[in-house]
Length: 451
Ligand code: SAH
Image 1 (tube, rainbow, N blue to C red):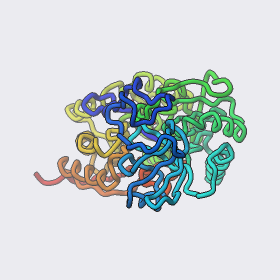
Image 2 (image 1 turned 135 degrees about the horizontal axis):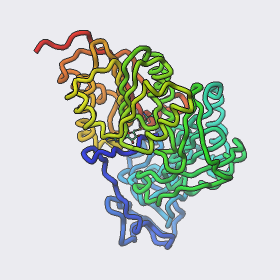
Image 3 (image 1 turned 180 degrees about the vertical axis):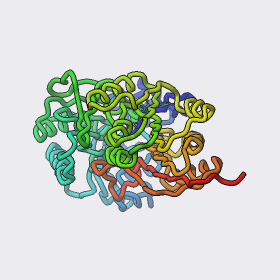
């Protein structure tokens, strides 16, 4: 799961290839024959069109598959036989002809295939999806989250063995987000299985993230099964949040921060809190319930702030301690600095600045900027909760960026917590890319560096 793109032009990630006109049609032509191949799309050599469909890897390029990593990049492919269509399940063979996996093919993506199964015998059919979905649901049941929360991530894509499929639960509404050609092909099967297993009032599809364009998929947003209730709400650790599944960000709510929000609540007592990139007020409400003296919350989205204020009222929290500001955080932090405002606890939970490593340098500048400003706004002994949900920024790099920001701000700081996404967003050990969200809680020292 990922944050919406930044609304700050200076930190806006590339839109990628949004040209849908050039998608491979069901023409029977092999992908290599297409004249209008999308800009940046891989050129995969095609073998015999009459041979059985399959992917042949270049010699030595099977290593990642043997480590059970589920992505096959275009550069690892020697050739594709047959005339497969985007979304077809194909056997993947090593140079010696051994079948290593069955994967969903996508000629429009840099990730040319995503593995459904590493088994030589497993068939990828409706029963396969029933089994994978049942496993994911059993894992969530085992977490006992339902005692305090009505929302959780039920299916976390690659990490649940279902590349490209995300399913979030908000009470009796499920929201599906499809981000791969393979999951797109099996969309209705998965919806049927979810309907059967979870019996929701509604399955809503929010397949409209920018990353779909990189897969050559058009955006889709609408009801898949049942009827969408007028008001969708999620209860999280006994706090109620309205979720706009149709127009909100991502699937409507950021479930990945559940545990981190709860931690903030336990540390906010009697503090002046600044919550940057607050969306619908998640961290703010926990801080207020935790006894914060004041909470200033900033977001660029007026609609998110409107829901945040509604959430505050619905939870009976004291609105006199809450202030909402619609602004660009990059500018607002400078204004607060110029006003000499100080806080005891600051949260920085920005959108994804770097979807891939290619954006890392620019993203690093953005992270350094906001962290440096936040360090300057903290009182001695204050706490900074700082996050990155960028797949293109490693945990190690993020820590280095934050360390650089502290140095330039002239403060010493200690890491008191290393944070990640909540347990309903598991990370498959063979798929480290699943660990997109990282956070640090830092306590700044009582004194600043001598000039
Ligand atoms: N912390 C939130 C999730 C944050 S998502 C939670 O717990 O629910 C990132 C948020 O950053 C979005 O609400 C988006 O509107 C906002 N945003 C993006 N760019 C921004 C900018 N430059 N200034 C202020 N807000 C921004």
